Image (cartoon, one colour):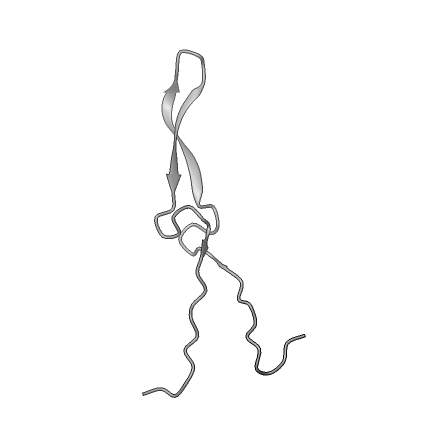
Length: 64
């Protein structure tokens, strides 16, 4: 149980740019000589392939 003076842990937010699908495999078209698809891996630039962003920091105090 948390009291009035204890901070609660914030959960990570899903990245709004990739909706949590941070890494994808993109086919280059065609196959290699073994019959495998040629692919590259692309990561979301906003979350660096994590799928989550840091929670926003809550500022306390009076507004100026």
